[in-house]
Image (cartoon, rainbow, N blue to C red; front, side, top):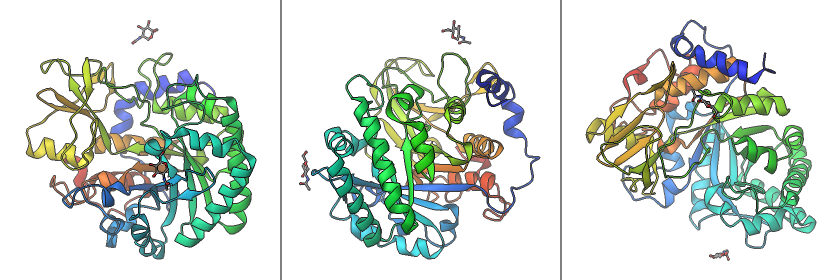
Length: 418
Ligand SMILES: *[C@@H]1O[C@H](CO)[C@@H](O)[C@H](O)[C@H]1NC(C)=O
Ligand SMILES: *[C@@H]1O[C@H](CO)[C@@H](O)[C@H](O)[C@H]1NC(C)=O
């Protein structure tokens, strides 16, 4: 059945309604699924000293640590010499020290290299992966870095080889794809004997996957492949929805389609981790009275109160806007398929996922026996209960679905969350 993609997509699409509400499955036995939490260090370093400030300590103290099986720390960067992994900020190392307490609880910690911001300086990545001496020096630098800062592993997140910004695949050379594969092989040979984990975050767009990666290399050398299932970036000229199921199987990208196609291309489902975003995409509407998916927008939405970046809004800011600031939520359907909600006020609109959407994704991960979910980023959950739905509503929902009742004892408090 997995071989027939349109069929499975249609099947899932048609069953979406009952699929979501079905609660009949018993809790999965003995924690087979991972819930990985990214931590975005900008939350601890670059944001103000207010409700938006989150250090790893705030994020994962006490019982809250149980919501994450892995912590993926974002981001370290490639040095200007193209031979080394380096801290992003002079304050990074101070925050790394917080991670010892997590390790003591059995949480695996990985340092993520790259991310959207550093990947804009793509020349240094190209020089790293296409030069044999640079790769060799870089691998040594990684081993030293992981040992010094006591990380359990490395997650590579260059966005993306060959395809600049995940959209333009005409400027990069195929050497980048080959070199990135070589780098993975060399890293694996150095890290495996020392029991370090090696993984990569990859684009969810099939055309980018085909150009940027050698799928056999991903499968052979990585412990897992994290599919950034929210980066189908389409700009800000109209309101875009990241579809979960294919509404139109032949023409529209969707998360289910990506996962199944990757599987067909040779990445086993049990090596795949589905990346889920707790950041909504925000827009300025072309006309304040015309809101909805597909309507015209004039650009990224205004920078939000705490995260302060145009075009994105953390879940805790979205629910705060809805609960306390008069933003209106709309739940649309296309045919029988539930779309992600959006919220708007005046000419500002934000698309996002709520706890119901996370439960739906958790169920999919479970049914397909994937490795688990990764949340970008845990610091964007409502960690301080400013929306009065309990702390960490999003992470609790995912844990409920993927790790069973032991983590979240019976309380489905997230059911009425924004
Ligand atoms: C690396 O180069 C950038 C300019 O591309 C510069 O802003 C930055 O300070 C350099 N970093 C170091 C550590 O020299
Ligand atoms: C699906 O895509 C095809 C080809 O672009 C188009 O003709 C058709 O109307 C679309 N169907 C839906 C339901 O959007």
